[in-house]
Length: 188
Image 1 (cartoon, rainbow, N blue to C red):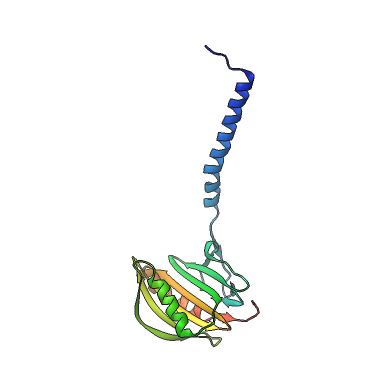
Image 2 (image 1 turned 90 degrees about the horizontal axis):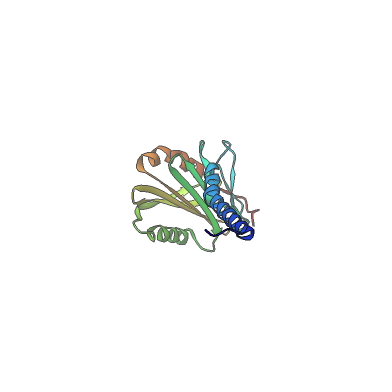
């Protein structure tokens, strides 16, 4: 039987140390990540910065999903969750009219396999005077609504999705929240 030298023993211990470290990273970091929720509680009635000077008052009971929220100086997004319903707002620079903005949003929606715009578009407005258009869409196992507003060189796109039961229950709260969209213009 061969003898293991001191140098070989050190190499073997070092190899086991590297393997143990890699295993700790591979299994430990995802476990730590899962331990921290991506959702943050919100204070009722307090506006949230979406980006580019746009704010919205989220529905009562909504949480902010930090994985889909990126406020910025010239553009931004916010992802809220109200139970199983997703409520997303995206803001970006735009040099065009409301019809063009609505057409682009509908094209992006229908560009996703299985998604279809349903019904006609209706006029919608915010309490701060932004005019917009809204409509509905369907997706595999989900329904949705969209709205788009144009103001101060920006397009503000709102998409809402969830199963029919949850969507029907939360839609009045989300529509009330959407009416609180505000552009203060100081974000750019």
